[in-house]
Length: 247
Image 1 (tube, one colour):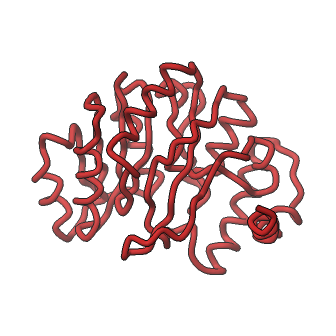
Image 2 (image 1 turned 90 degrees about the horizontal axis):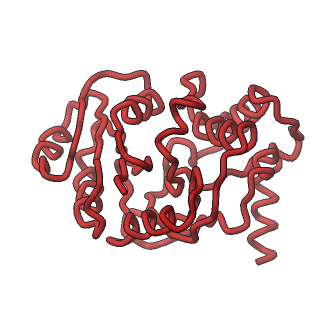
Image 3 (image 1 turned 90 degrees about the vertical axis):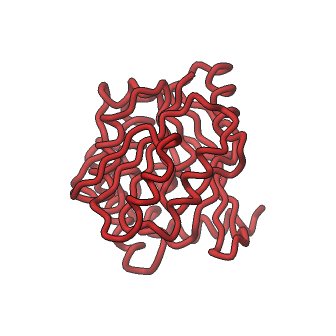
């Protein structure tokens, strides 16, 4: 089974080499590794060119943001499955893609969802972000599985569409809503910890980001004709905290 991994980057010279090496070191070798660069001005391109045996396809050109770049990567992909690996993240182990392949060969589903760990720059793990108790109905109250833990069948994108560029930080939420609730794709929880993710991404820092993603979650649900409670979505932080304390 061929797996397409897409990394989107811009001026990522401080982190991109670790990301590339985590792909290089995977035990499963039938990987199509695609890097979409937003016309970096630092040493990112030099690092990419250093690993020609790992990077199957890459482009460097201006784009309209993160999701536009992801869409370019999807258009370039030819694998059976597609996964996203951010430019400051790494696979959690050398066996991740092998485990994903084994899972999808065992279960013929449109998508698998798993877990990620979040870490500080010093490597200390601060959180396990698990999908174990997630189901699509939780999208109605503001909960989605960790985006980097999801592996989609390639054929879903031509049929159901790609990331909507009308969103600043919530296009992944909208796509997951469109795929999992509106179109009821088949899926299964893999239990695999796919990714070690650096804390502090665009959609995970600060009150202004919280307000923006809250607005975009409601927009995503409305666009797809999904009934929801605006109050539950606004209060989702407290439901998360309650769930953590309950555990």
